[in-house]
Length: 494
Image 1: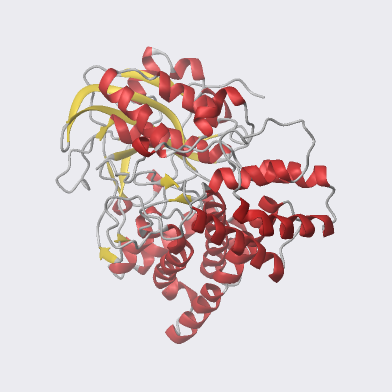
Image 2 (image 1 turned 45 degrees about the vertical axis):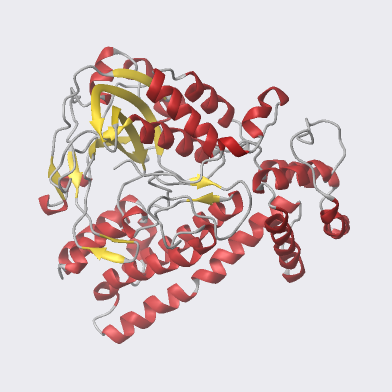
């Protein structure tokens, strides 16, 4: 392994025509303070973590000093927001300072979120309060630990200035890392203007960056669309299997790389209900938990519209090709989802009878108002009495109402080729015990915002680094919120 470097940039997006972005320096911050550096991620990106935590590193993370090779830009895009099209959005409070190559030669964006006004701020200040920075750091890193494709947090800093929302709040900046920040909305911006050449330019960039196999396909645009569809189907299946509610699945929040982005009004369910909504801005429940697969397919249809001119000169043929791919989404999603549910139930596969098995279990969870995460984790413990794992029985047990279903499930497990110990290990690896529960995230936000105390933030991150390994001394991080602790709404940070 080569020695880690301070930062070595290779900015491919900034080599696109200037209509794709605006060059923009971050705003300077008066008195920045380091909250946390993600040392493991820095090492993976071949960045010297000690330098990142130094005064020079802090100056970069706060936007006060750009390292050699940085080329700060704000990218432009459009998007459907809650179903309504906005022809120009863009990075209103985020600045892409450059791209780095990791030890394997993979390319990653380094972006400062909350770094000040850009040409796309639409009257906003471009700043971020501390709360959204804390939330995104916690939830994105928890998602990574659970194996979900996601943007990540490289660092968080305070800015030493106040941000004005409905109240005066301390400001902060998140350093976000992604395979790229190219969204469906990135293509929509140019497609809506009829700029097919620009759509093709961005598509070619996408192929080079994310879909190299598509270059040799008969119709590269169709190959890219098909791969994006598969990645989104797999991603949403993971969300559904973990009880994750994104909260704002607009097309500008759907990365073509297949990573989860934008942890604003997001949440993990406690009591299971498919209609669960936490986002304060989703009054109609468009992005409710149970709607997420259908919304992903709807978003993909908007992507297809952008690509039609690149599929075939004959528009009818182009629409037919795109529709054939779109029609595959439900099968791809349900195949991925069934396999994840099979893993959660300790089965090698999931047939129609097994589908009825897990659907009946979810119905019972809804009926009995059970905690989604703990119910599946308790099943993991009941699948095999090895005595080698610590139990969550002190904080969750099944009522007698579940007895008939548990008998059905145990009978089905006995018919499965997996040995009981193998089934349990599979379940323990599929059913986390620690998730970023809303009240814990809110507690970390409040202590940091009100008292400048980040101990809760750091401790919660430590627990969430091992979401599948239960330790009884961390019991309070596993239990659901008490009635007085419940967080019923989550908010974006704009």
